[in-house]
Amino acid sequence: MIGRGMAPIGVHLEADALEELSAIERALVASFGAARRKAEFVAGRRAARAALLALGVVPDAISRADDGAPVVHATTAVVLSISHGERMAFAAATHTGPLGIDLTDRRDAARIRRVARRAFPREAERALALVDDESACRAWAIKEAVAKALRIGMLEQSGVERIEILDLATLQLRVDGAPPALSLSIEDVEDGVLAIAGPIRRP
Image 1 (cartoon, rainbow, N blue to C red):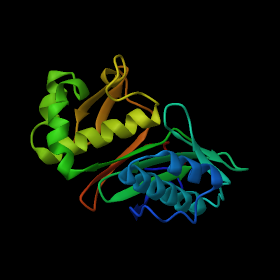
Image 2: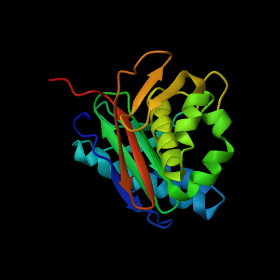
Image 3: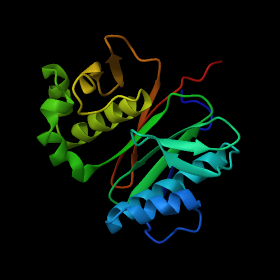
């Protein structure tokens, strides 16, 4: 069961929708050269604000950590995760972490296959991921969501191999040889799949 307030919120990419952004965020947008990157960033921040408002949090700004993770500047402690694809961006937020989400477009299946040996280094895991394109997208999305939640680099040495998918149908994984203390879910969204790894709701 996912934690309270973690329902992801999605928005479509719009490069010129800057009115909701803070001065810090507008400066970041201006630093990007490609229009595509600007659109992704703006949509991600708009989705993030909507997710934070659903928690009752009004952020002053959303900046970036050195590893690219979003940092919320607000009076209330909150954990935020953002992901974007070809046409949409999603964000989720919670008062208690860890939290990671990943949107994987179905058109990414070919790219995932090209990096499969690095992303899924174990033979049994790779076999699960490469059954078909849908499996490849779902495997990448859930692994990326867990990697974000635990701040593990997906394709970095001594990073991605820490996460092992045991069963895609039931979302069974191991991190460093043990089941992660995370709630895992995956759902179909427009043009892709969205995976969420977050805190387990306590009774």
